[in-house]
Structures are given as C-alpha cells and as structure tokens.
Image 1 (tube, rainbow, N blue to C red):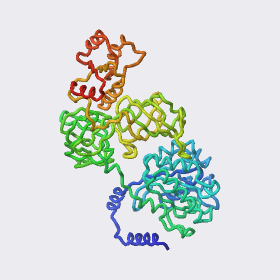
Image 2: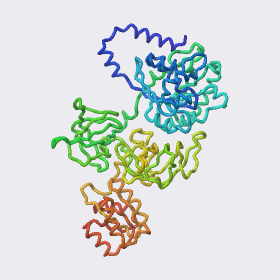
Image 3: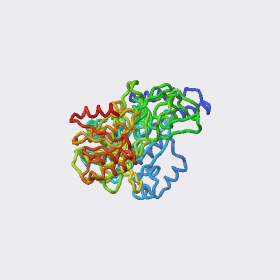
Image 4: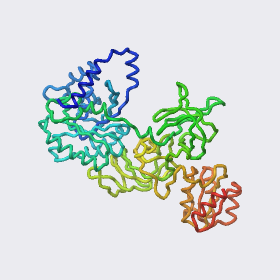
Length: 567
C-alpha cells in the first residue's frame, strides 16, 4: 500500500472516532463547506459522461430509482454487463440516441470535505461554444484523454488540445488530465507516462500553472473514487481525492477593490444606497473610495445587507453600500479604492483588445457593432479590426477577415462609452464581457480582455482633462492640427465624456452647427481641426453660449494643458 493510501486510511479512522454530531451541527457544517466548481472536457467518446456518472455513483450521490431507471434503459453502450453511467448525465433524447453530449449538463454532489458543481460539456468541435460556457466559472478543468485513442493517433487529439487551450484562455487555475480507458491498454504505466509527457508539454506551452495527471478507468471505477488494484504503480491521489484537496485560493479576494453598481436604492429621503456585487478585493466601512468615471472621492458609511450591517464585504458578496457624500453614481459605474489607498486602479478606455470565442452562425466581421455587457454596464462595441485568429491545434496566429462559429481570435473593439476594466488574467469578472446581437438579443460571443489599445490607454488615476465643476464644451476646435484630434477625443472619453471627431469629408462646414447641435442633444462633445467661419461659431454659441473652445498650437501636451487650465 502506498503512503498516500496509508494517510487516507488514517484520516478515515480519525473521522470514525469523532463523536456523533447533532442534526443542527451537521447542517451548519454542510452550509459552511467549500464549494468547488469543475468542468469536464475532451474529445468525442473519451468517456466524460461515464466518468461523471461513476463519480456520482461511487460517492453515493445517485438515488436508487435513478440507478434502477438507468439499469433498465434499452440504451446501454457499456460492455460486459456494466451499467452505462453516461445515462445519468446525458438526459436529452438526442444525447441518449447518439451516445454523445450536446448541451452542458450540471450535476451537484457533496462529500464530507466539499460541495461540488459539475459542468459536463460536449466534446464535438461544433459544440465548442457550449464547452466555453460551461467552463467559464470553473475552478478545475478535467480534460479526459482516451488512452487507446491516443495510441491510435500517436498523440493528443485535436479536441483535447482545443479544450486545454480554452481552459488556459478562460484562466481556469487548476487543470487535471484524467487518462481514461486504461483498462483497454492493459493498465500500462508506459502508455500513461507517454500521455503524461505529451499533456504536460502542451500545458507548459500554454502557461498553465497547476497540472495533475491521473490514470483512470471510468467503466471499471479505477482511481475515480477508490484506488485501482490494477495500477499499483500509480502513487498519486484518486480523482475525488484531488478534487477534495485542490486549493481554492482566489485572486479576486485579495486584489484591488472593484464594486460595479447594479442598482441605486432610495426607499425614502433618508437613505441612498448602491447595490451590487463585490467583483474583486474587499470593501470596508470607513474606506476611502473613488467613483468612476467622475473620480469623485468619498467614504463608505455603511455596508448594508438583509441580515444587518457588515464591517467588510469581499468577493463575491452582494451588498448595498451607503456613502458619506451625495455623489452622482448610477448603474454601470464603479466604486474602486481611492488614490490614497495605493491600490492598482482599473484601465479606463473605450478601445481595447480581447480574445473572443465566437458562438454564432453569422461570422464576426470588422465594422460590425454589437451590444457588449461588461459587469453591470451595457454599451455598444464596434469591431475595429481582427488582429489574428488562433489555430487551436497548432497555436499558430493566422490572419483572418472573419471569425466563424467556434473559432477564437484576438479582436480590437471600440465602445461608445468608456469601460473600467482589468485584464482577464488579473480578474475574471472585470476582465470579461459578452457580445449580444442588437437585433435578435442572442449572445454571439464571449470575450476576455487582454488590455487597452496602447494609444488610448489611460487609468483612473491619470490627470483629468477637465475639472469636475467645469462647464463642458459642445465643440473643441484645434484649427489645422488634425494630429491632436484623436488624442483630445480619447482624453475626453477617458474622463467619462462621450466625444467624436467630426473631421469627415461628408460633413461640410455649413453643416457643422447642425451636427454639433445633434451631438449636444446626445450628450456628446464634438472635436475638430477645422477653421470655422465666425458665422458658424456664432450659430453654435447661440444654442450653447460659451461652449466653443478654440485651441491653437503645435505642441500637443501644451494644448491639453491649456484646455485643463481654461476649463
């Protein structure tokens, strides 16, 4: 018996020696257990559903009537009298008839150590989008590898590589390869070692930080819950033991504070609170916080919940925050730690790069505009360019004009309002968004933010173009200096004010007052390098007195500095 199994037996003996718990103690202990979410992925017929069915059965998480129904099913693809455990998770009629997983199936079970949520995802390439959806919240990804199929192909199958790449793209912190069907290769250690080396080489290439490889037979139950008598050469944990002991430290609980506002609550004249979920870090009573995009600072007066006030709230708690000062803050905006706290602040930009998993039949094309939902803010996002498409089999970056369903690409977006975001590597919740078709409301893509476009990157701490109490212009003129227009526009957007350039050949000078008026009604500032006639400027001043700013000079920094001083 190996040392690992000796330790497990000692733990079980110690558990039996403990005095019996009351029902209340049992319930409190269950409610206080850690929750681990994991997903299964891999190629077609690697045995994902069978593995989950075996895991549920051997942990006594299947009701007798469910098991009886599976045993009586006319569809049974297990050989030699075995129960077809895949039927416990493949619930759709089409899934049972074809023997494949089509949609994501969620299952729940618990042991004495942890509670678990399983996402059983499909293996077919055409259902890659389903796999990405199921894996998006996972703490652990189990990649199944068919030992016999590996031997036939002479390497990892394309879908195994694809799903491992998606696991790395989604930032899943722990990845375990369950080398299945070891019974079909004679429980060979040499076969397992070959697969382990190939998988670890792929993970090293993808930069996955924590990788474990376990030989199993889902059909026979080897190394799933109980150790295998046929693979005594393996001295590591069983799959269940790994899931029970893998660390669950989350970067979101220790990083800089982020609190997207979901709803403003004002039940009476004496209370105004901001409801939302802590997306990262910890929010404490008495903390100095900054509101984005206004960058007004205030102090947290109370953290309110249904069960009473809290001294602090951490990711992923949902709370209502009452502030000391009456500041303008609404849904889609964000509270972060104030500058004085010394914490890293989010990027503020309307242009950013993101890795996109495309989920719709109609391809993603440059120039298309979609709704983008990021934290609690929904805005319009336009595809400016497709940087490259990723060949998930070779990891090569390929030029592409369009992204088809289930393909993955790096894309540059421009939004109509600035977003407050971290990179996905730093924080899942403030670094991700979904793309929605504006006509059908269908979710068409999932995006993981890489970072802002370099030329437009600002942070919440960067110096404002305009002070908070200034009157905002409706038009900023930079006569003869077209090179400054984009920088000024981006600085305004970083400040939280929509702005556009009106230096378009299709807009004659005579139409500028009407264009500026339309933009003013939409709350947008016009920026131009034109030299307007005094009559046109006077016409604009007629509906917006004192709201035309004219700047001249070739020094871009001096222009920005003067704008700040004058406004």
